[in-house]
Length: 371
Image (cartoon, rainbow, N blue to C red; front, side, top):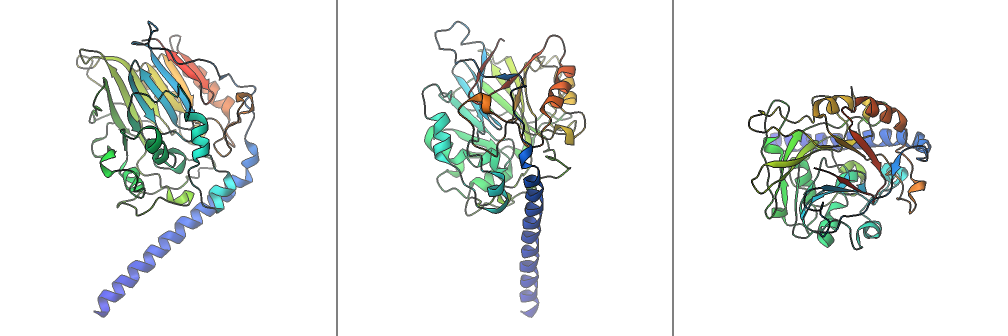
């Protein structure tokens, strides 16, 4: 009995030590962030795209063109005709001091400010895809699902699933881990096909770059369901980071438009799709959605992924300052603190091939891409 109690006490002490280590890492990392928090830059010299509107169903291009609406951070609406996929949106944008020292929570007023209006693009959504489980990719998802997408299933990592178990408003059957059979450059993973549409997607094994000074934020995973949603930023652990290959299919189930989505910069070949047999799957990637922060903390991003994909179109996401509430006027947007946006765009320009084009969208902007 004494030996069992001793083992229990040792386990408790080890758990406390791990928790203190998490707190120390969060504290030191956030202090470093605060030291440079004034370094977010204006976007007036960047080619920010603010225009566009959603195509109506009466438009001849509606059935074949792919439309993308940028929602800010890692969130996008991707639709073709009536088929829609959404990647985890984020609008609450707590400040760096709050992330470092205070509790954070989803802000419905900021979510509704952008989504509670006609033409938000969410109608027809078949799935919500989550790239990783940090707060700026997952914290707003429960409210968005509850109010706007109650019938839609959420897909992501095992850590994402275990984190969302802490929100009792979400049925467990509506949260699906895709981590059991990921695709990679060497392996064709499982194709997931939501009901009621001509969409399929494959989760790809990826990674999350450090943000700056080679520091990574809030690493780790959850191996068991949480009893409540995390109250502090460090509680939203990264888990396995994923990229996604998203296909819009024709009536014959052949791929008619292919999208590659990645919400965190990575070293190659993380995030790469499989090398498909051209006889079985000849479709190249049409649109690559790439992430700006951390590009200079890994090797050859986004060059390596663009060299591999050779897309016709590129959309850049997660570029604006997500430590401040989004401004009403796109002219007031600022970049992520410490981000060398012009350096990223220089690499991107040099990596585009065969007349490929890119857009750096403001939150709310609609973009249309021909098949």
